Length: 164
Image 1: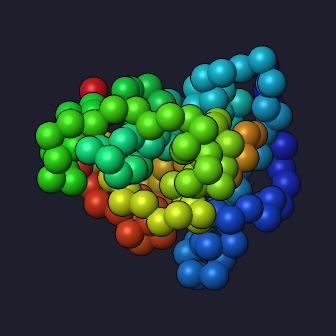
Image 2: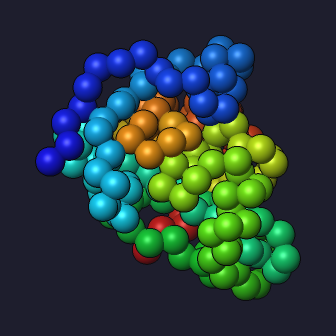
């Protein structure tokens, strides 16, 4: 099993954006297992954090435009709910290659913060149950812990019920 290791925050677009905005965060680095494909559950286990506090960043194609949904790793993104939040009827998961191009991050390390192209962002309402949540810091094996309000400030996002 991966173990957390104390380190300074790697310089990623997410950490640069948070630092520039004066938003406090805690870097959470762990050893990523390259054979793992469930990155969020790996992070929760490696960091010893309950799965409900670790959030994954997913991109959806909502009637031709990309929208970011941020939900707990223990849940799935409700595409219909996400579409409704942004005033649309239908959404499908975005092509991973397109998600990587638009965000500047690789799948498994896509952060909702510091994306290459600013995209509308919706954070699942369960984030407000916690003082802090963890999201990808911009690479596999690196999460950022911050307050949900600070995550919304950093992304310009909104809160809604988008997980199932």
